[in-house]
Length: 304
Image (cartoon, rainbow, N blue to C red; front, side, top):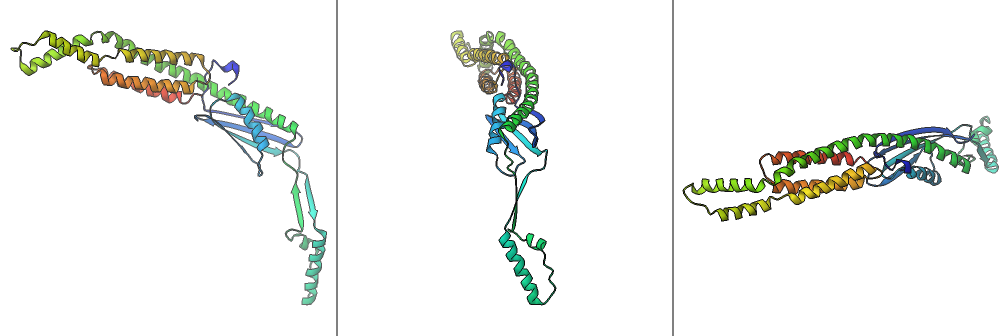
């Protein structure tokens, strides 16, 4: 990604095309497409029959300057703007020999001589026609690189536009997750009292109200349950992950893999929180938070 775009986010999905004249011999059209991929994978395809490693390397170099991640396919089509020069090689001795042998056969058969030179020239191997070398000269390669840069600029503009849209969606999901924690934290201080009350009610249902319950033992049991249900550490770590996510998002650049890792950590903490905190209504709220995290990760996986 260019230095001026380091604050921007780029999607890994994009499209661009350009066309230009390379010389009096060639014009070229370039089409660039990309989809999600863990790493940068640039594939160059041409309409030429022979292998063209020099051209592919030049195209790949230009694209790689602008892109950090994604599977990028570049379709390069070279078109001649003037007829190609050809070289014709005729095996004269073989032509004369073949013509003489065919006429001798006609004489032996007693028929009229109908074999002509054009009949012999159509025989395989007697005439060879070769085309001119299709590889580009140095100035034509430079012109091709300019066409590829034009297509790449259009391609990157689409990726950055999609990245800006994704930034808004990611910020919205992060706000929903932050609101979940904001609503949860004030309730954590009341957990011990609620556990104590529920434990007392449960014991009374089991042994009846006539049996006295040791208050000290009751408090101890409630403290054990409260410790098991304590999610303060998970809340602190989630706050840290949210802050790191927002910071990376604001800085922009190629942050897709970092944000994907943070999404995994957020999901892990939510799983732990949900298993420890079983308050009434909490399960539904945790599920909603995990769903928001899944949406977050789906969008992050589109980022470069």
